[in-house]
Structure formats: structure tokens, C-alpha cells
Amino acid sequence: MVDVTLDEADGSMALVKIQAETWELNIRAPKGDLMQLREVRDAHWDARRSLAIGTCADAPVYWATSEGRVTILIGPDDEAWDIAVVVPLVAVDEIVSLVQQRT
Image (cartoon, rainbow, N blue to C red; front, side):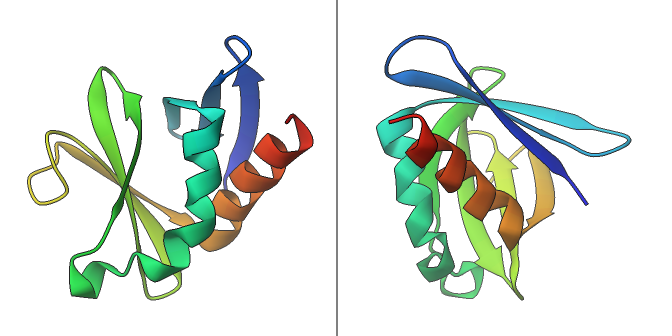
């Protein structure tokens, strides 16, 4: 289980906070880019597809699905990342919902 919150840095930028009991991930992205997460179900890792949306610790963030979960990859590209976190698909749906509510 993860919690998702959305803070607005300014009119177009957002800070997405995804956290579990033992970790927290902060991703910054334009709200319009975050809306592209609606397409995450088509970004199948098995087909080496991912969505490049946002930054974390000044590194690009890539999103891909596998086995009904979303892997968030942080690093120079989606093949050579530095950090990977797996979250339930519902967490990404919640990000999209929160962005929709604030646009």
C-alpha cells in the first residue's frame, strides 16, 4: 500500500509524493505531462516501452507496467536506471485523478 499526494509548485508544475511506511519518492513534473500517465497501461516493460514523465533528484523518471504493477525507474534512461520502485497501478490512477481535480 502506498499513499499519493499532489502539491502544486506553481500553476503548471506539480510535486507528486508517493510514500510507503519505509520510503518516500518525490517527483516533479508539469501537470500536463502527468496526465500522460493515463497511458501507462500501454507502456509494457516486456515490450521495452516506458513513459518519460518528470524528474526526481534531478534525474529523469520513466514509468512502465509489468504484471499489473507500475515500475518507476529513476536514472539516465529506462535501460540503465539508478533507482526502481514498484507501485500498484491504482497509485498511478490516483495521480491522474488528483491532477484532473486541480486543472
